[in-house]
Every structure is written in structure tokens, then in C-alpha cells.
Amino acid sequence: MKKSGTILKYHQPPEITLFSKPYKITYFKSLGDVDTEKMCYSYGEISLRNASIRIYSESPTERDHYQILVHELLHAVADELNIDFKEDCEEKIIDNLALGIADILVGNGYTAKLK
Image 1 (cartoon, rainbow, N blue to C red):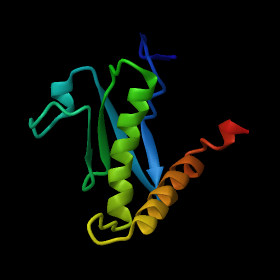
Image 2: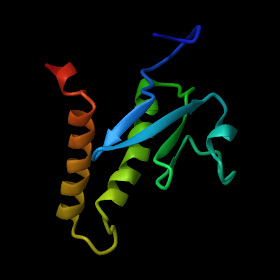
Image 3: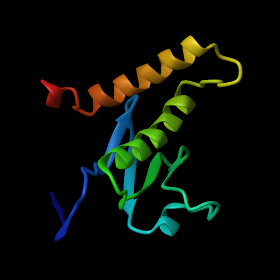
Image 4: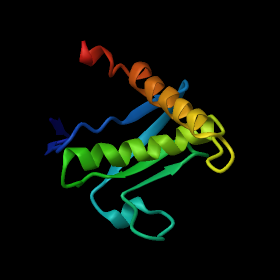
């Protein structure tokens, strides 16, 4: 997989849609560039206001790479569905997270790749 003359370690979509809202994804080779708040060298960061995600592109494993991406997307799911982790029952939380993951998979064509 190539991008502008460089070889990518893992698939890096430039955008993922969640509930019809596109989230732009930008990848960085330096942890310091990911964390705009300069708080703790995060591997990923989401701006819900700007619908943008910043991801560290040099994860040691493919699983780490996708865990970071899914982690940030789940912040968006929780925000879009107004999940209250302190007040909502576990079943409602899990159901809403599943709804968000299903929307990401179907809405971005990932299920077609499984057929």
C-alpha cells in the first residue's frame, strides 16, 4: 500500500462517516503532533466540534492501529448518541455502541469486503 511515495504499514482511511457525518482522519508519525493539548502524548485524539481525528501512524501492530482508530470513533458514537456512562444501564450503553459500530461498518463499505 503506497501513499505519496511512502509505504503505509496499515490501511489508513482519510475519512470515516458516522451517522452521515464525515470525520476527517489525519495521521502523524510523531506522538507529539497527535496530542494538540500537549497533555500526555496520546496515540489518538478526536475533535467532536471539527469532526476530525488525529492518529499516530507508527503503531507497532495492526491491532494497535485499529484499536486507536476505534477508540476515537467510540468517543464520537458516545457523543452522537448522548451516552451517559454514569446513568445509562449497561445494556443501553452496549446497544448504542453496537449501533455506532454497525453504522461505521455498513456506512463505510466494510461489510461489502467481508462477503
